Amino acid sequence: MGRNRVVIVGGGFAGYHAAERLAEETRREEVEIVLVNPTDYFLYLPLLPEVAAGILDPRAITVSLPGTLPRVRLVLGEVTSVDPDHQEIVYTDPEDTPGRLSFDQLILAAGSVNKLLPIPGVATHGHGFRGIPEALYFRDHVTRQIELAATTTDQAERDARCTFVVVGAGYTGTEIAAQGPDFTRMLANRHPELANQSIRWKLLDVAPRLLPGLDQRLSRAATDVLRARGVELLTETSIEEAGTNGVTLDNGQYVPTHSLIWCVGVRPDPLVESLGLETREGRIAVDETLNVPGYPRIFACGDAAGVPDRGNPGGLTAMTAQHATRQGKLAASNVVASLRDGTPKGYRHRDLGFVVDLGAHQAAANPLHIPMSGFPAKVVTRGYHLMAMPANRLRVAVDWALEAAAERQCVQLGMVRSGTVPLDTSSPEVPDLRGEESSATTSSQS
Image 1: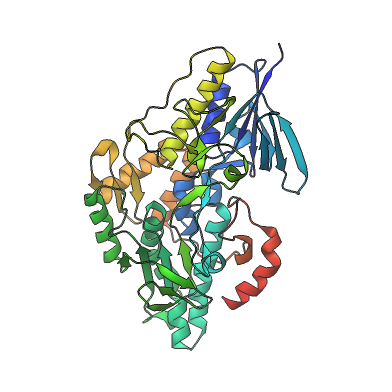
Image 2: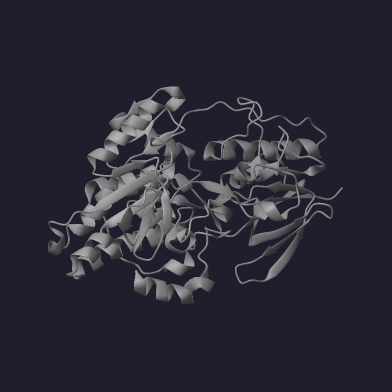
């Protein structure tokens, strides 16, 4: 009997750990493992705000797929369709060349993209936080706004350029709003013209408090830290419209700004809609073994999969890195079980808590449901990230040490233009170079 080909779609938390587990549990002559992903790296997404703030080098949180998964064949490309009946996928490589791959077993771990709401102007003027291009654009954009503010003598324009609006007070939005004031203060300190200039950061959410899905004590701790840094917290508030020169809040207030950071959450990769498979809440329906009903050779995991939550009957597991990592490993083990006529296992999980980095010496954490804040939480938070990263731990630790001991490097690289990082994209991991021409006009207006 020949080798079975197992194809994994997506190299995020679920896909990476599925590939790693498959390599551990199978022999080379038994299984060929193929991973299809738009980039040649796994992105450790939780540390992306620190890349945006200039603390970490982007290469520190990007883990080479071929370098750390030597048994896995990487196919660079974005999957455009799946034919479950003929056991074949179609993909497009980075040079727009189409390709096909047959499979004996398939693991769908396509992940998620920025969640959009039908608010006029958001897709055009807002920017998300799901990939390295967006983080690098954010770093350049914020630096540019402060430098342009120092150049102009128009106080209204200066105020607008020194106002930053973050929508969404979940993990990412809270961390960005926490990192932002220190970053902009460092930038402004280089310009005597901004000595008396107020720099405003606003954090909006429709919920009545920050981090609405977490323990209230930790929400209060994060609230206290952000308020101490001057962040304006607007709860039970969202935006009604976004424009080139500002946003209108749903209470009617107009806020002049050139910076709209969109962190309202995520939605499954658009690939899910095109598959023709049964869905739950927009995610691929699976049973507790992560198998797609009616297709014994297809499994789904991570943000793209609607995995039943045994702790919440009738509900689905949350779209978090913790669940994606565990589900990826289980999907791989169940693929192996199906190849060897074994018994697949159901998804069980125990919540290990969470960590939220609030910049400087502050964090909020809940390890094993023990609420912590301040410096002890910071130690736990950084320790958790180092343990969770598949590689590059030393690089991250060195960057953290440099941040504590040396001045942060804050310059515009100009490598990522606005039009190449649209909010509405199926691949936030890679810049949309087709939008480069239109971005020249947009950047000249910003």
